[in-house]
Image 1 (spheres, protein in one colour):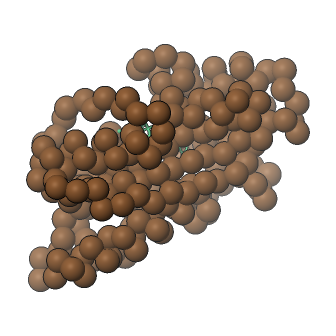
Image 2: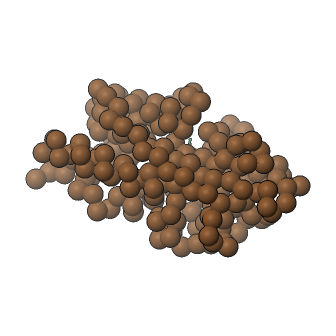
Length: 203
Ligand code: ITT
């Protein structure tokens, strides 16, 4: 029997890699935006991770007629009142890359001592069809911000983020561990249940 196809609506290669690994045992075929020829920009104008995840999944589902999932995620730093939050991808300005965002974060936290550098990653994943939002799944990963970039693994703020219970950044920790404890891993675990339920109704 042909597998159900599910589009991962992200332009972020780091996210895509993690999503593929964590969902590898689901009986579905993951497609990328490239696979379906979708290359339009999507305006993320909502004020929450959930709102923006729903916008991304819905826009792609309506335009492509596929079953679609979209991840909206970011880093909340307590000493910065939750910034960069939903603006994490463009913290150092529109079109900024990971390097520039990390430099800006280190600059903003320059005078903040270790015990006040607490932070968390959040992730919300929305699942949509062209006609409805099936649901959302969320995950949180608590930790703190290091004083300098360490390690090459992962993407985004990983070289600065030390997850709770570890003494190294996600940049140094093996991806197998990140894919068990991260905000995205937790959200994907819940999402897998939503997908399974939906698929059992389709077949
Ligand atoms: P898409 O919207 O196309 O999925 P994006 O990178 O713009 O790609 P977001 O708007 O959700 O995605 O922004 C997420 C940003 O939060 C991302 O660019 C990183 O800077 C940061 N981020 C999220 N999850 C992360 C993780 O697991 N490790 C490091 N940084 C992460």
